Length: 177
Image 1 (tube, helix red, strand yellow):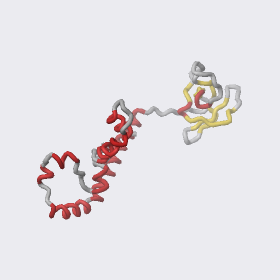
Image 2 (image 1 turned 135 degrees about the vertical axis):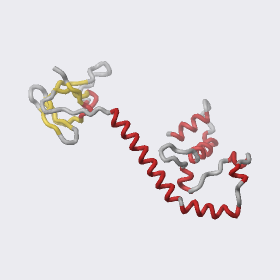
Image 3 (image 1 turned 60 degrees about the vertical axis):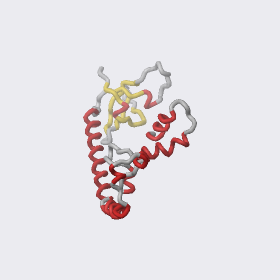
Image 4 (image 1 turned 120 degrees about the vertical axis):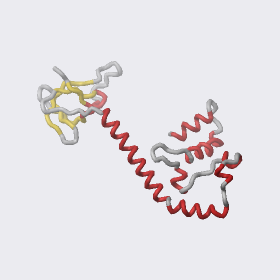
C-alpha cells in the first residue's frame, strides 16, 4: 500500500499518467532507509548504496572521489560484507518487533472468566439476531460452563440449556447482576 499512496501523492488530483510516475516512485522506495531494518532495500540486495540521479548531474563528494580502477575492488569488499549487513538488518528488525510487541502487550487487557461467571456475548459475532444498526450489540446473559486452555469458553443459558458453540474471550463481556 505504501507504493500506491506514493503514486497518488505524486499524481495529485489528476489520476492519469501513473505509468510515467511508477519508475520514480519505485526508485524512491528502493533507495529510502527503512525504519525496520535500518537499511535501504537496494543496499540489502546489491550490497552497496545506489547513486541517485541528482548525484550524477550535481557534483558531490562521492562522485568526485569516484575511481574507476578501485571500484571493482570496493564492490568485491562490499560483497564480502553483504551477509554481515543482512544479519545486522535482521537483528535490527527483530529488535523493532520486540519493541512493538512490548508496547502492544502493555496496552492489552487480558480477559478471563471463571466457571459460573455471567457474561454477555457479542451479537455481531453470533449473527443470531439481525436487528439492524439500532439493535442491541450484546446478547445474554449467559453462564460459563466450560473453559478451554486456548481462551475459549462454552456457554449455557441461565435455564441451563448449553449453546452449541464455543466463544473466544474477545467476544465476551462480564455481566454484573
